[in-house]
Length: 113
Length: 116
Image (cartoon, rainbow over all chains, first blue to last red):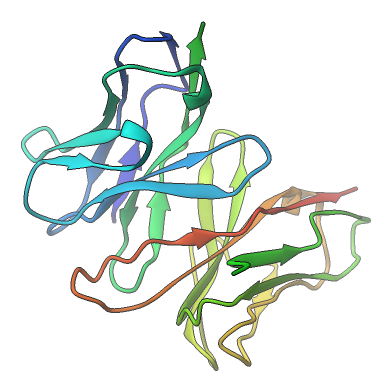
């Protein structure tokens, strides 16, 4: 069965510093991987996805993610964090056909001034 | 363009009561789905639909029913609410197919349900 793991419940970063939110996956076949962000009392918003091709995927709001097949990881990164990046981040993998997604437990990112 | 609209935003039920969470999208998306979000567990798929008249179960379908009579609407029914169904519920939709075959889900704002 497909699965994703987010090993950190919370990540704390100072504003201006680089940030990384970790995600590892377990799939049979080629993975379709996603990152979504949830701001307080809102629905999830799409950040980026990896389907195939370049291992470095660029997304919304300056975020990017690096696909690493040998380490089965898909870490989310940003070179310089903003206070407004503080939110709950979810990694997800497509499960079989259609657009069924399996989500990780989420990582809360706190960016401090 | 409203996107995905969920109603109500908040609801309190007593154990054993029934209710329907409404979901409507105006993007002509074929695929619609319901997730529940619980602390520390991420989002779990309840039911999904790939078109009018076609529904299937997700990871946690017990206690929930769905139907899809139109492309736009995908209501989620709780026939006899239980405290374990206290959660935040999200409806999400997307196109199917396309070149990559992995289309982005558009989420509603959520419905917070409390069962006493």
